[in-house]
Image 1 (cartoon, rainbow, N blue to C red):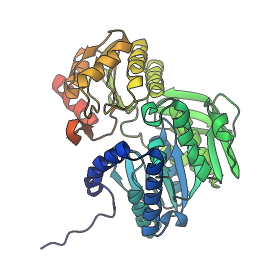
Image 2 (cartoon, one colour; image 1 turned 180 degrees about the horizontal axis):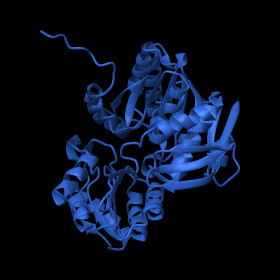
Image 3 (spheres, rainbow, N blue to C red; image 1 turned 180 degrees about the vertical axis):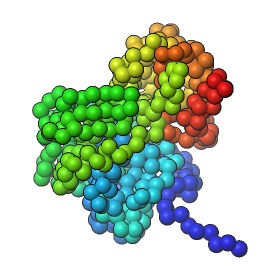
Length: 437
């Protein structure tokens, strides 16, 4: 019998089996005080680190947090470290990477659990990684997943209201983000243009690096030029290019360049790394170019929606903008559903509402709540494939179809903990092929 060769990764579908623990966590939240839960999570963080030999203390660890742009910024930093000659590992909502090998994140969480992270880092250290870049979520911080990760550098992309029901208020959500900078005491990378910059800059650090476009910063972009294949801008006299569309990606690149500089990496090395980086899957990802444009994106927050639609309007100048989206269920962020509808109504000529991740909520009720903000200017097609097919069928030359909310995710989460396999890019390509054989 042929011997099975184990995967070089210790993550992936094997860990998805641990999802049954979600039921245990749900019961704990019902019957155990929040303060006691904090100690429970802290203990698990310590046990995980101790079990795997505190691997983070053998590497230089960078944590990336914020409301939007975390995964893209994480990937940019990883590429800069790699270009500089450092063997690097990283975790994000898109990939898990060790050196040049990567595996898709199937867990539907940007920051995995404590045991997962510690085992991943031990495996990376064994394979010679000297640097790690970790996407850090507010939920992860709330559950002490950031503990014992020995963060050297903390990075903030931006902060806007999100996960309000989970945290209780925007102030509490923002405070969770700030905790990353309480443990990453050496270098803080801060967005000077974000309205919360002062809030994060008040914490002490050996080095603080500010980046931005509008306000004065250590790394400030000028002459930002967008086109349909990427974004060009100047930083401190050096012209940079990224193969990602949208002004917001200039901010992500600035954050990555700031990290590189803080770690002694020249801007020329950063420039080369960013120029070689392909577009991120499911992030302003153009799937169809002719006779009309179709792009998919992960945008799920009001700020991301606004940035996405503004960017598409500005860059593509569509005759008609057709928008397909939904909102996450499971009781998550119900407050933003009408806001998403209102934003879409301001920018989109046609709106088709559809399923995203309803979990145990009624998909129809989710769409009704979005409709309330859109003023009734919508069409509802709950089946996501049919919604995409509908959008493509009404598009004409010069139009743009934007399908958002899933990006590169590979499943739609429905009631009973079930997941329906999903590939947004493939579905768009298949439905487009039916119309244009």
